[in-house]
Image (cartoon, rainbow, N blue to C red; front, side, top):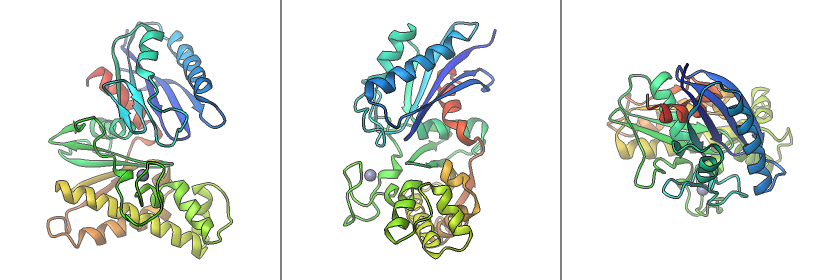
Length: 303
Ligand SMILES: [Zn+2]
């Protein structure tokens, strides 16, 4: 009988739950949308989906892996995902331990989980050092240094979406000013385009389609997002002297319309830094939207 893990990926607008086996295949998956729910209702949805999934396995549960949007508090087992404002210091680890009577519950940043998965079976296989980033509703990061996940003192390492690249700008949801996420996340690019008069929709996919059709405001907003992301990437890799970056998440998956300006801007920024010039490589993630779930499972399975 194969070992099985319950993985939970806490994002910005939804939570994904899945049973992952030791071959790292996703056996079954459920999604809970956050919109319209209060804190108790959200937990109740997560709880019932988790019970449903765990009831369906024929073996004992090895453990539970949680990858959550930051910030997280690993010591207390709580999560305060920036974009899920109804959960602040939410004690998810204890709740799950009590619910399933398991001790092996691992909590980590969602982008750290993404980065680990890409390192073990994805685009980062064989790389000794790299920065992983998820560009989606929010922006998160993870680091592989000397072939291992780097967690930082409070396990929030590489909180790259909330580094300020414009300290005189408006205040971000996190409290700082001019964060990368305020320019380069999907919703930010849409909001910035709307401020300039674009009326083509609500989702990043709509903005991307507009840009593909040649809409100048859409193109400009995506270009600005790509520049912001590139500055954030360069700030991080310059500080660490690492030469590989892996980008994933919904906005990256939208295709060439964002990828091309990102690649170009990163190359241009890197060309100004002697030790990165011609060396910094940007790759697309391989694992798609299940990377976080797989990474959280790897941490429990200790592969
Ligand atoms: Zn911020």
